[in-house]
Amino acid sequence: MGQNIKSRDIAVDVAKGIGILLVILGHLKNPLMDFIYAFHMPLFFFVSGMFVKKGLSLGNMVIDKAKRLLIPFALYYFLVVIYKMVKLLAKGTLDLGAFSLNNPDSVFLNVGPIWFLLALFYVFVLWIPISRMPHLVSIAIALMAALLPLSFYDVNPAYLSSALLALPFFVLGNCFHTMGIYTKLKSLDWKNQCTFCFTCLMFLTFTPPTEYNQLNFNRIISTPTQYVLSGLFGTLMTISLSIIIVSLSNRTANLFSKLGNLSLHIMATHFYVLVALYQVLVKLVGDKVEENMYASYFWNFIVFLASIPVCYILARLLERYIFSKLPK
Image 1 (cartoon, rainbow, N blue to C red):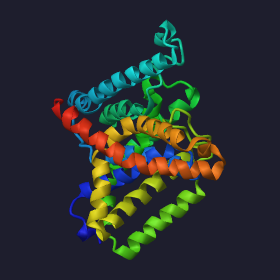
Image 2: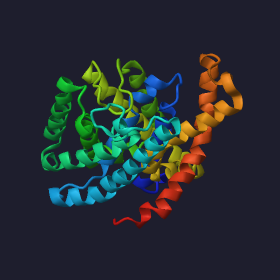
Image 3: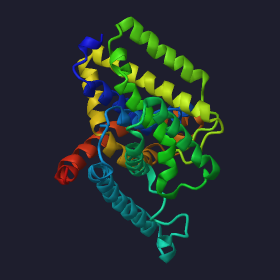
């Protein structure tokens, strides 16, 4: 089965494609919320760590990731602030208080999904001092670092707490690849691959996080062990499923891979696409949207399906006309 996989990029991009769909779905009320939030963000940090290079200097890492993450963050942050200002202006509530950092509703705070870009930048920087250590030592240090936000979980300065909580998954992802586990997983035949995927699903089902964080890790779950296990099992399940998809259908794999390649832009823009589509839906069907729980789930799923091509097209346009022009 692994021999049918042309490169690591296909399976990993498929996993990212699945992950970004879960991110979109996770921002709509649905019966799978607990399942999705158990691992959808750990997945992205895990795959980011899989192929990070060892031996890079701190300076080179900062420069490289500033170009790839901080510049996109700054551009999207500017767009988010403009969006908030326009929204307040339309409501007639835009005043000087909206620009005060002491105001929790300030246009400069609560940046939305782009928190991920800033947190991932921190994770890459934090990786440098532990990258030269043995695998078990680096995992232990990452786990201890993740415990730091336990004492100040309501404080998340510039999403640094989010980065600390994500660090174990990044390090585990690197170990997963450099220790050859990913290669061994790809080499499994179809039957054993399905068994592995199903086993991870069962472990994930029986180790749900008792208190998942809404959006960005800055509230630690009450049981850190479940936090790590659910994130790890869900991530391994998704990677295994991606390998299965690649081996069974090139067309399906390519569709997921295209979403995965643009996951950064979809991550940054999908929430606002959902807001716009939901407003259109309310105009079309009125009170039926919230008629009952099942009606809400149904219409949210319609919004989810409609958002996929919209998010993809918007991400393609942003990449082609803006971000491809930035320094690499």
